[in-house]
Image (cartoon, rainbow, N blue to C red; front, side, top):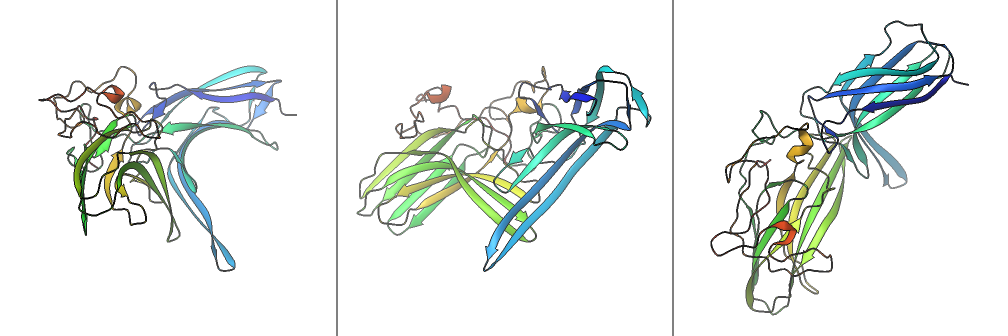
Length: 358
């Protein structure tokens, strides 16, 4: 029976969200109890980040498995100086500090066919004995900033609204969303101008979608998920309407991933017209969802005030007041929903803040 009991590895959180980013230092303790004096070969703690993809496809009578692996870093620290050290009976606390390397690394992710995992491991090895080990997974987020007070994405761009147009036959639709880069919990303001010159009734709908692509051995596997959806009032034939709605990004949404070779996660707003027994016209507006500022900062850190319209600061938009009613999904859509002020005659509604466009 092993004399090593209650082996644990614990670490100190850097912020309220319990997240870590590139360049952070993880401080913690490896604790264990020995029931007798024990000679150990090594005691170490390891920090590593890996991405893995795996799925199986049927090709005729043959099943083919596709897999890929990407390692981002591995950092190891020995907690016992010499091999063959005898540790006394009792409770032990071995402290450690490990630095996450700097670099452009994707956030933690777990999906249907793959995952990106950042893990803290501890192991005690003894000669001619099975080792004892334990681990903790870290919530890792990509850090969208360079210098303090400056908010950036990997690619610079504008916080202006996205615009998309659909024109075919007797139907024309122009859709807009009040930005390009958002955080979980932000509220999107989606607007659409619809010209229905046909004889059919149609209902406008808006959905927030996520597209995940897994890549391995030259093949891809794609999955699409609808994160939330809202619908408006039915539009009459031969009419023209301008509608808008507020949609809040779920707090548990996966962040966009564009910096992993084998897994990518994209988000977009789909504005479409639900027409019975007919093709549904649609407009897709791409978004980038990044972690909030507080998720990448230790306690007490901030970026200071932002001037209105500055990158990373509050911005404003010219969208009309929301017209979508509360649908079957229970999302509030009236002016002032989610804590946003109702638009006045001279000041439009406050939009969600975001980062620069990716």
